[in-house]
Amino acid sequence: MTITDFFDARLFMSATITLIVIMDPPGTVPVFLSLTGRKSVAFRAKAARQAVLVSLLVISLFAVAGQAILSYLGIGIPALQGAGGLLLLLIALQLLTGKTGGEAEAASDDVNVALVPLGTPLLAGPGAIAATIVFVRQADGHVGAYAALALSIVTVHFVLYLCMRYSGVVIRLIKESGITLLAKIAGLLLAAIAVELVANSVKGFIAGT
Image 1: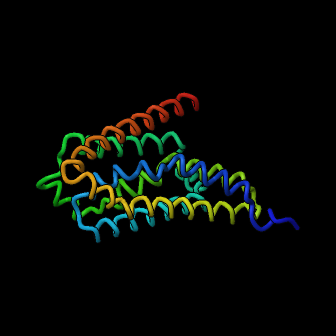
Image 2: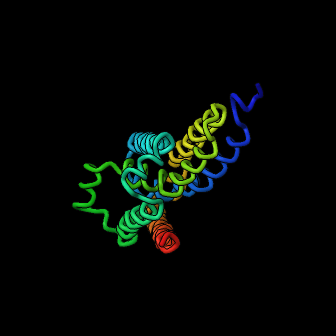
Image 3: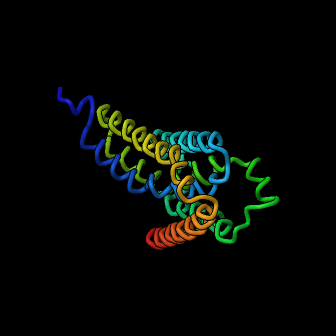
């Protein structure tokens, strides 16, 4: 027996790097702050924890039964990309238009932003889900490969948590006006990500026909 029978270091490195690039921990900070920057420190800490747990749950679910779920529902990756893109586009428009007061502010108390859009589809988005399913296929039933993939998923989410949990340092530097500016920038970035997801979805549907 070799060490790869217990732990596949090569798959661990490959999966970790790929998921970090796709999920982009530093890139989540502007969006996280634009949604929670005006809340208390306790709220931000709770939101960071919940967002990571939601993302970890979704990614783990698709790692275990992703292919079966998509096959059973007749859903392809392009459909996931399109749905995720449209959802992110709605959030982006809210950030860009500044409609975060009054009723929208009250709604944000009822609907936890840590669940949507932070947990999914921003963190556990179509790209991360698709990559996870691909890596599960690569594991091909080897226990060491599955262990490496599981550790990789946990490691990436730990990095995500650290980036969001300690984003308060940024708030102390940019103040209230900076948060407003950051919300506009985050909205623009989210809109670009959303358009890219929808474009990839269309390409996927065309390629599949």
